[in-house]
Image (cartoon, rainbow, N blue to C red; front, side, top):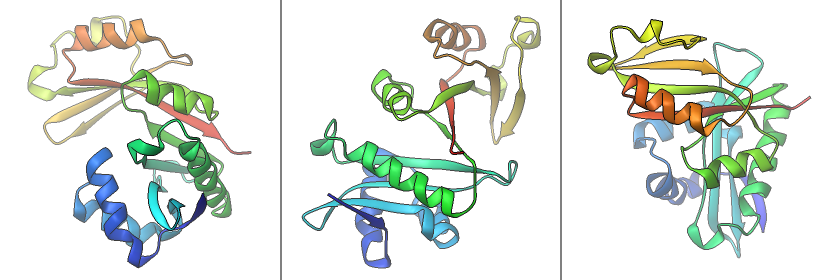
Length: 190
């Protein structure tokens, strides 16, 4: 398998992978590419694109890059393609002189295990709650919130954790009436 930067002729196939497995809108995807082409990488089998990984600088933390998405075709799951792809992405991040990668993991064991296997560790749980559904007493539920970030009609509440605690994840979802609770994971590249 061959890894390289995604070029303009690769973008439609890359966006199709994004649409099937990830979820950035067309505008978001192409806007991110224009600003971060060096962080859009792909893995190819017999010249066919079978996986993508992309990210961008995180303005809030100058030494950090946000991994926005990684996906391989289902036919290449558990083949090592994803690990090869993320390692190549990490090399590109280092070329930008960034020291850390952060990401929000999909809320399933296989995805979380993939990141753990590749050296990423939980730093927070992010609970996404519709603002109108947020319990009035949420600050008195006993959680320590490291950040609260409004995003449209949703508020994202962050709870620090250094381990993958599935019970805490489920409890947060129940206590807050969250639509989703995912692990934020990070990797230090130094």
